[in-house]
Image (cartoon, rainbow, N blue to C red; front, side, top):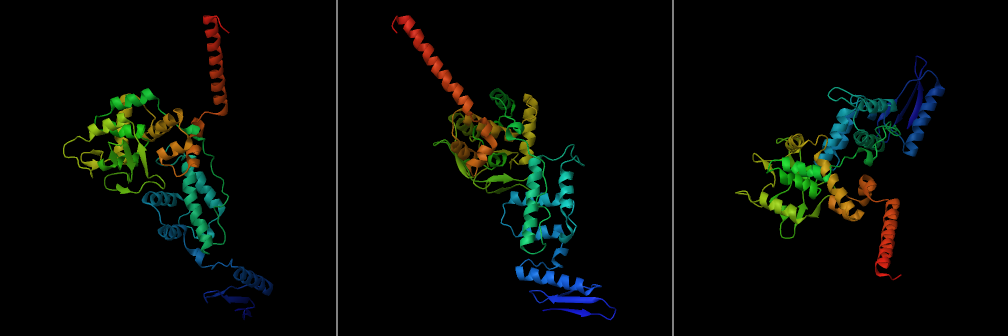
Length: 372
């Protein structure tokens, strides 16, 4: 139902009722403007594009809290999404007033130094945070909170190629780290370097996850949290549940570690002062090891890259590496490590080198025996 009434002061008051029966009205000086507004609203209702003007009054902060609260996320995803929402520069702006310029300003702010950091955030971090905000904006459009997504098409910093940003320690450097580490922390480093587990996955191992007879390590959980108060076991990242086939040398190191008095199968495999390791405590121990062994710059995650590079160098195919690392798809594995696999040029040189070695060897044999 829609109508236009002329008021005593000479203005025109168009009004209509939305699909929920709620009445809306505005005032115009000219009847033609009132009719145009009413036609636009009517067309939007017919096509299904209608958005209640009052719906967009909700602030981004309040909308994100509502939307994220309905998502079925793991704890780590929830924390990452909350961090993204907390970083925006338009948290208290009503949704209907947010413009692409607001999002552009936020992206630029993340790209620059700020209080507490000497440089801008990495391009990959910016993209991750943007993706959460972008998802919330798209959901607002679907829920008819806003007419369009102001974050769509906002340019983002270009991420560096994996080959340019990845740091991989050398074999002797990993050996130095193991030698410099306290005896109880050596197996933790070894699991990261020779089984490729993430920090949280290694911290989340229980003794029952290690099958010494079959020489396997089962990744069933990870510990997430920055300190003892916030750390809790959660499911591994999507697709990361796996069985890792470990070398005998690593099994021997873990067996010796598990011989501590009173250790039960359901106990955490790695503890410090009776507490399981978390991101802060494991990171602190690793920084101490780095300092003692002169390996400044490497992270515990770089040991995972070390493991992957070793598998690739040994001739493992992409599916084997994918399953060992717990990637949900081979595409992810290739996206991170494709630069480590031999190229066609490398294979051509190797094949030609084999041919040349065989030819020269045959020539040497004929000279030695006197037969062609």
